[in-house]
Image (cartoon, rainbow, N blue to C red; front, side, top):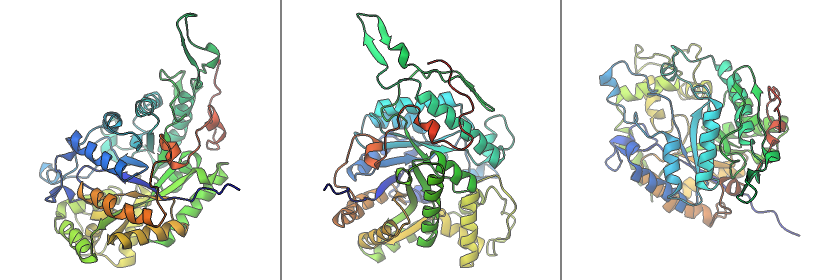
Length: 462
C-alpha cells in the first residue's frame, strides 16, 4: 500500500529590503538603499531558493503609508521607496528556477483586467511560479493618490474585492489550456471553440474580455490573503490558497487555524487546499545570548518618532501623538483601517500592561507577529510546536535584518528542520502549486468555489 507523503512545513520569505525590523535600515550590516538595488533582491531570492523556501513575498502599498506630520518626521523613515513588486518579480524570475514569486496588489485601486494580465504574464515568465496577495488597501494615504480624500468603508472594499475576483478568475479562464494551435498551414492561430468570452456586467465592473494572455501555466496564479477581520476571513475562506496571519501564541494560532479551515469547508472547498502560514520574526544566534544581543542592537536603533508612526499605522491611523508616551494606551475609536492587526496590538498592550513607549518598542520588530529569539534548535522547537499542534501549515519568515537574518535562517534553522524530517530536502516540482501541494484548477472551476454571492454575470458566447 502506498503511504501518503509526510506533511512538511511550508516556508515563505517576507522580503522588505533592509529587513522587517523598523530600525533595520540603520543596522551596520543592512543595505539602506536596498529598496532600489536589484542585485540586493536577486541575492536574497537566490538565498531563499537555496534554502528551498516555497516562495518569496513582497508586500506593497500604493503610497507612503506611515503617518507623518512634516518632512523632518518623514526623513527618519527608512522604507519609503521601493520597486513596484510585479516589475521586480518579473526580473527576478529569470534569476531563479523553482521558488514562488508572490506580490501584493490592491483590488481597491486597480482594475481586474490590469491585474489578471499582469499576474498571468508573471506566471508565464516564471514557468508557473506567481502568487497574488490580494489586499483591499487600508490607509487614507493610498486613497489620496487615487482621487479620494478617504478610503472606502471596510465592507465596501471587500464587496468590490469579491466581484473583482469573479472577474479576474473569469479572465484567466478566457482560453482553454490547449487553445493555441499556431497552425501555419491551415491559418488557424487558435481553436475558436476554445475561446471563452467573459461578458461580465456587475455592480462594480463591466468587462467583456477575453484576456490577451494565454491561460497561466498554473491555471490560476496562487491566491494569497492576509486579512484576519471577519470580512477578511470570509474572503480568504472563499478564495485564498495561502493565508498569512499573525498570532502571539499557540492558543491564538490554533483558534485561527481551526476557524479558518472550518470556514473553508463551509464554502465547499477542501481545507487541505488552503495553507495557513503565520508570520514569524526570528532572531537566530549560535547561542541564546548571541541572539539576544542581535535583537538588542536593533531595539536600541528605534527612533521614537519612527516608533510612534508605526504604532499609529498599526492602530488604524489613530492619532496618539498628543498622549504621554509613558502612559497607557486608551480606548480606541472606530477605524476603517486594518481591524485585525489593530486588535492584536491593542490586546497585547492591555495583556502586558505596556505604556505607549513600551508598546511601540515591542512591535518595532514583529509588528504583531510572533518574535522568536534563540538558537537554531530553540527556533526550530517553536516552529515544530505550532506545526504539529494545529497552529500552522507553515510560516512566513520575516528576517529582522537583510541579508544577515535570511542567511542565518537558511544556514542554521533550515538544516535543523530537515534533520527533524519537517522540511523538504529538494523541491517537489517546478511550479508554486506543485511545491505547496495545491491542485491546479480546472478551467471554470472557480465559479463553483466562490463566495455565496457567486458570479454576477454569466459568460456570453463560447
